[in-house]
Length: 380
Image 1: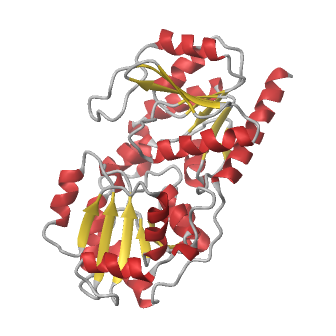
Image 2: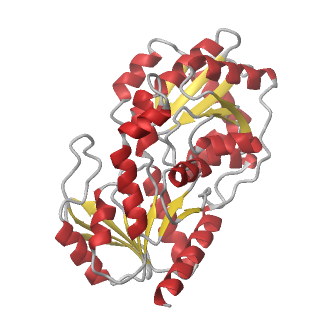
């Protein structure tokens, strides 16, 4: 299979984590995986006999120089012609799936909804002002675009029920729910380290008796960092709490302004060492999620696999993790509601989560079985 992956960047992020897992696990499950991504120049990065990344020359995004976008339809079609895939997957809802739909290859196509623009932009902008039904009418061209793509694609993959339900309600065809999972063998309650927890609290100027909260993600507006920070400040009036944010991105100045001079809240760079990151997740008392525009909520799943409860908004993919018994949900984008949820979990003495979380191997086994069925049906 060829994954036409406009969101891939070697600089990190959730898509890179997903891609790395696909390249590793796919061949073990009998699939040959090619990631076709935009980059500065043509480059083939081998990851094994049946796994590689092919980058084709493309312009960089103006708003974020860590990313590129496919800017040449003919070059994209030529790359697909050369690769001769049995199936093409596209991970962006924007221009690249339209171009892939126009490609002349006679193979099944799958649109994997790795992004939810309606929640990331439209609902975030207008929810305070308008009912969602009105917002949906204002952004009807986008929904028509997705509906049109679904008629050209054999499958539209959703990793959360929230997103699938909204797409189906909007008339999108061929949707399938295939939730993602966590990296196998990395996250476990056994990684909890009282010494690490005490050291992290000490860095925040707090004693071991304080609550240690963690939040992870790209520093962008849809993650609602100001809501998380303000809620922790409010909850801290009742009990000592520390918050560590792990992330990088263009909203860093705004996040630092929101933190202000508070000594008990710190922004740190993402932790690339997976074992240390897993230990931090397991050693936290709770993981907070602010954004309601997730398509799966990988960090929250990793927290649950670590035995750490999550506090998540009642909308978006992350809500699936909280509703299923892994923590608490709060009214999305509401500081006071989030502060109340933090206080409630603290009053319960930070109970550990026992919820089972599927692995990425489980996810890819389901995904590739689905793709084999598409190929068989297409050939028939």
